[in-house]
Length: 585
Image (cartoon, rainbow, N blue to C red; front, side, top):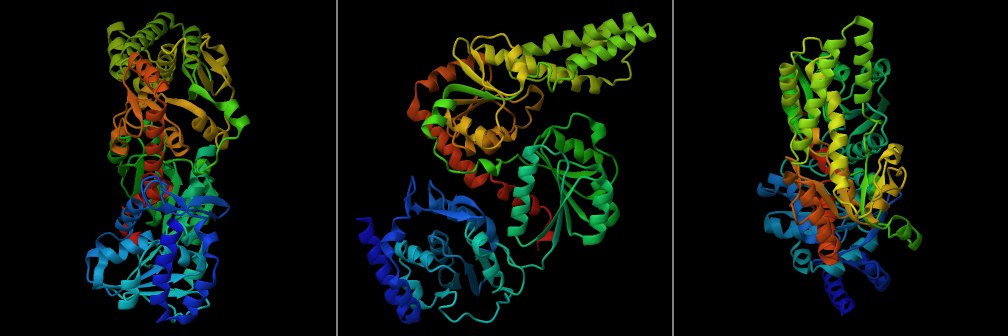
């Protein structure tokens, strides 16, 4: 039935097209239409998508959920208010499956002519099979150009009231062809002179390396030149002086880059992914060229107070988890489980509390401050014990508790530490207690745990240690195969959440997590993921969703679609650039 509709729609479009370009209509008529239609994959709600290779990766051309909704959202975000202005011509690059093109024509009506440029005739066939463009073609509102078949005009120079737009997926495949048609460097929004971005990796974590690559890809897709450098101060300065970039970008904050950008009057954008635990990390002064985007809400004020303009911006999924793989039988047997948790128990690895105790005790012996040191240790242990009660209610009160216990104990010697620094160190110990407290509540249900080897020192029969998990593909398989993926946001990071939330949903996993202050800014609770506030509530929810497979899968699917449509690295880069109009315009 569908093929009959495709055939009728295509025939009508080609008949209209033939009057303006007989060669093009003849070429499209000669293609093997049935084989092209076999590539179409029905989307869950309405419409179609299909898979395409882009830079060695397999992507979907449209949303697998609702192509119409995705197209409307992308057109609104990239064209925005320009759609309301008086317009002349819309230069449209890449037909795709035609959803964006159809919506653009319907939205703009007869106020604008659309010039469609396509390099691959297959896409024209698919778009013309799915949508009826006869009225637009016959009225002259839609002109179709195919590389080497129709007569293309001289390179385009956009007039003030013209707009240009490219298909967000297919643009990457044919950018050199499209760039050859337009005098200014093309972007998905508006033309501009080509500018240079110097991207810097601050910490060599694999997640940062992957995200840095994805950020660079987005900058290039938007028409920027990108120069990547490791964080070696002398080399960075030389690279800046040599390339004179319009923009410096780094993963995580760099005080040296903030100072350099201020000195040279170059905009500096930082995407800070970690919670700032030490105020000394942020230099104070006047830094008018710094714009910091931090994934933790409380850190916005920290950067603002230090003289850096700051904004809240969540993390994003690692794009190496993007592949739409189906687990093999062996992979499914290996990774399937009722509940999984990927993360550190913080017993000793990544927990500096034991080293802090050792340092204080060593100073006590060396300087004869046994009583003072013991009072400090007792105050810390009491504050940790009090915080444990709050942790089981998903609340973080440690800074105030620590000050209170130090004051009550009459502590006068902090052994070169500040109260803030002490709190930052023992926060990891509180996090260890928090995570284990929640996970112990799930006994006797087995929980597969992945992470550092100190899981072997956790004495709990229901916690099954499965080893380290490779950050990229293996993590994705764990998230996909687990019935329930737990994320326990560290107790001192409740003003945000980590990229693990996005990674689980991106890979198609069902996610349960403790509630944070910002999670509802990004997701609809109960529809795209599930949250809990106490260990008891977590256990009840696990018992419920382990028995509700359909409900669990529906939530996972909605979460996956929402992340892919609204929370990609490209979305984050676009948001950051919206704050620097002097660079983008």
